[in-house]
Image (tube, rainbow, N blue to C red):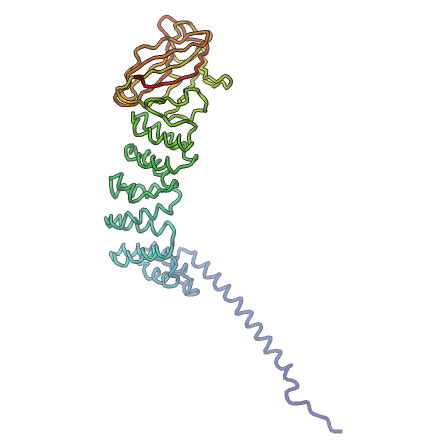
Length: 417
């Protein structure tokens, strides 16, 4: 019997199996190779050796970050990093860091046209703070105010964290506070708040007025502490008129718990002691000290000051700055009672010129009464327009330090005809 031959190609599938297997292995090796290669390149790029980083670039020539790393090590070695930076920018045109560094490198070698265009390209590539800050610095170094102010403002429009370097750069460019505020400071409380702190730290009292006024109009309760601190800073220097507008804005916007002040009808803040003091401004400043305790009674409402006998011989436990019309006559009214205090208590209200310290009141009786008693004193407002109403305690000659309590209520002040 004749044996039939297998059809042509019948054994082909078995013949293909080794080739297919080899292909699968080759593909697997190829797929494993690239991650290993890139991992090794990443390892090399972390080295401080320029040759190692250059090998990383050769292993992954399309990686812009490796080119930037190469620029780092070349610059550290004193070599020109421009080639690596140009390659990084070409590989990743949206990399603002590459453009910024390329611009700075160009400036270092005196190529100002390339420097400016590269820095502008960085600002185009990124809407973040860094490239705008780089441009502001560039135009500052070039003494180019026409371009500087716009980029300084752009920096602050998106700035965050410590903005003092930007503020300082602005003041290096100009000493004109109005120009700086108009051209560089955006109306953002996130900028106005640190700018006001900066001006206070630099002792630029007059320059701070615009920033405080704008922050009082835009700020939140988070800015209360700063604005009250600023008011204290101004009032301690006798700047009443400059402070009143800011204080009244805080009152009107309920950032402090008081009504706005009227110089003639109601220049005194919280004469009924209804709100907790905010720490100054035109509000009450309470100054407890060893031997003196201060508190508020809620029903009926009054303020009390207790003396233990261990207090200083002369002290002012209660004080308030009061804005007044220069040269006008004012009357200060109050009610009080005392317990366990002698007739010559050494306690009295005084009104001083906030700038000169001159005592303005014609007379002020010693405070001592077992029952609630109304009292008043009159004074002529100083030319500074700022008075300082002060409760003073002093040990009188031949007496001991007082022990007892003073209670106060119904304080008011107004201009006399």
